[in-house]
Image 1 (spheres, one colour):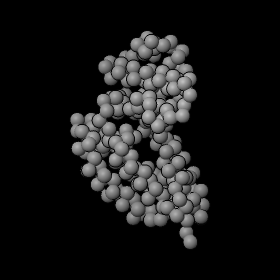
Image 2 (cartoon, helix red, strand yellow):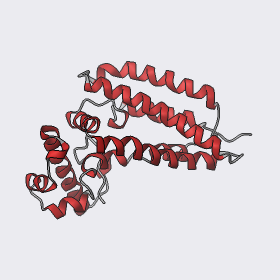
Image 3 (cartoon, helix red, strand yellow):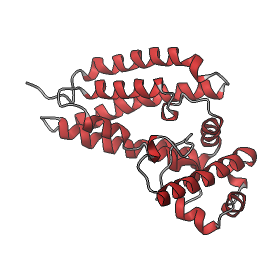
Image 4 (tube, one colour):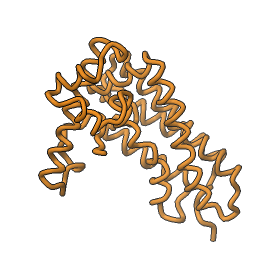
Length: 229
């Protein structure tokens, strides 16, 4: 299934190297997604049918389901491409880099880029998605229960692979602490965006908060996840 990122315009690095057919598929997926978000934002998630989205996007209902398996995927699909991101960051970090350091470096870089995954994005479509999730119980449940469980399981697996003692409990606690740190920061950023603040204005505070939060996590985790001499 074609994956898109929240806030994407269909170009950029994600499309680099793709053939014409794949680029067209990505553009179709983005058009469907944008159409769905606009309709949901205007009328509410429960009040819009997939058939209406298909008509507005000028595709068939079957085409919508070819790109998005469920109606909920139209909102959450792009976000869920980030489920394994913390695990990937730890996996790709140098062996001597602690997990908390790897994730902090990645998160701060994403903040600086105003990546929607950090919550620090004032793009209207991103704000519409966040507001939809907050206002729609079925989306909130999947976002905060399903997403968290999947990300935690993936990160636990990677931490366990780097743990010389191979202690499942430590890996689970570390994963929960690291993801909890990121989630707390992201939720605060989302709160500021929903309140109407500009992302660029909030960035210095968000970076300071990230430094403080990850420093707190580091006090408990230390060099966990780094190879020991």
